[in-house]
Length: 254
Length: 254
DNA sequence: GATCATAGTCGTCTTCCTGACGATAAACAC
DNA sequence: GTGTTTATCGTCAGGAAGACGACTATGATC
Image (cartoon, rainbow over all chains, first blue to last red; front, side, top):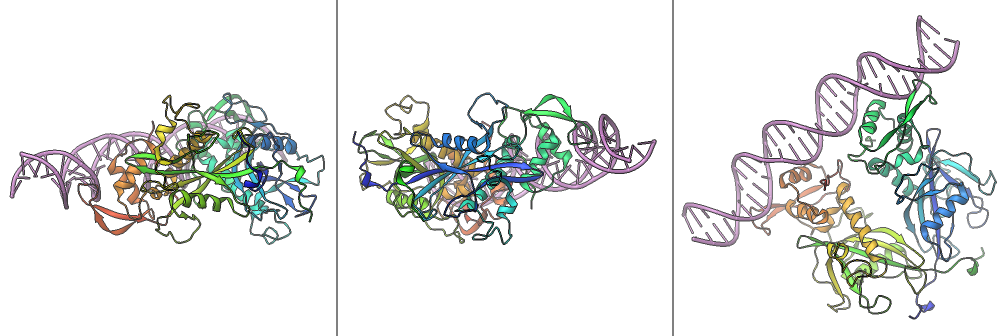
């Protein structure tokens, strides 16, 4: 079989970019790294890198995730819901505008990762080169966050981040994905605070409790209680096997 | 600014593949073309082609769609819902396993297009080289459709098609996307038959009528009636401005 | 022309789910 | 003990959906 004639198609560089989301102190945050070189030198950007010659796209994203956070990607297709410290990882979308990188034609396959609250990020050990930034700060209406502003993300990463946040916000409606933001064992109140942080709303604790405990397979009791939030001790749960929430959790009108 | 060192990253070919769906005679169908060359010579495959050097991914998909069907892609971001014969087009997912094409490393950005019922396809005028195939025939449990079977799609296109069908099935639940399968003016019954074909179920005509006519902005009366389905004349509607269906249309349990 | 088959449209009733919110329980701080 | 915080259970009204009866307006058939 003849290989392709290399002159028959233009060559592309293919990268993966990561939207890593977590909930820290009641705010939805994403991992950003500082660019050390041009273009956009010194600006914050989503972590990412080239796909290697013999590497699948998902494998490249998982590799980048480990390099940036130490998180082990959780294969959603794995049968037993292993309660490791693995993060949820899924493909988000692909961005390939001809001028999105001034150096050459780069197509970036963005991935979305959801992780429980983590210690400080470690990008090569340099604490100044990576951080958890509240998404509201990166996507808000502030002047600094506007495109071209000093706080704006590099390349088209603000768009990628916005798409990833919107994916997360809509997906926790009809799936059990919100548990990916929680540690292996968590309380109903902690799960509710995840929803509140991701959606930016406040939910009625009583109705939320009825909804999540009344959905078969969503939560399974883990057997203990905790008082780490103060107040009356709360029952500990683990994520159940159910991945789809039917009927869905309703996002309140804005 | 220095360009990338070409030896620093492996070169990829980037293609777009199209999952074009339509409803023909109560069945969900997709456009497939016959491959004229190795690998998979003579087998059916999804239409697609290389992304050009200065072309955006969505533009490449729209160009392929015109070439294969004559359909003009409908930009979802266009403000006025132009009732042209345009099809809905959106990015689906990206497939880049290292061995998905034996000739070289190819990353394919699959797109999903939804179109109303069309006349016979025209792939270079050769009626033998393109057809509308029922998806059930391509994805079913038959021996012929199994991977490696004589009726199986080339490359990983069965997987791409399955993902596109699942996207369409879930998206018509909570959006007005089902109207993309209908001509500019249509009846409630025709819209119901779209849902029935895409989901492979039968729906109660009375409850369906109540649901779609009771959702504000989903349908607007077009002013006439038609009797093209036989029986009592039905009112004609046009797709309204609403794109999100809240609460969603519920897919019956299987 | 009467009858029948087909498809569309309007209502009714029951059931389930949700939002609003009162009440109680179990911890900690003072 | 009193107050504060969080968790959990219960009640009630309103809305949406499934099941299904009834009526309407066409074309087809006898």
